[in-house]
Image (cartoon, rainbow, N blue to C red; front, side, top):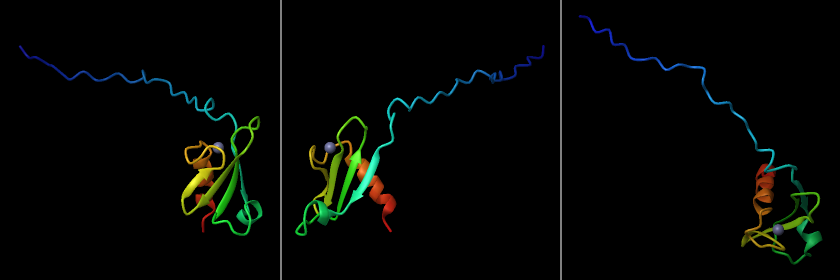
Length: 95
Ligand SMILES: [Zn+2]
């Protein structure tokens, strides 16, 4: 008696198909436009950056400010969904 018990090999070929469906989340590219803080707020502003973010063309743009308090939306505050978009765009342009 010779028990030839080999470990069963896993059969390849049954890998699940990879389907990326991220297009539903961001159907449009946000339009980010950097503005001059002095031109927008005035010469006495403490803002170091003012960025207009248009997430969707059907919506009005968000005005994102950056000052010593951090980043915040003029309309929705620091929790606005446009804030990270503006912050990332600044990170790109930073020297
Ligand atoms: Zn906003």
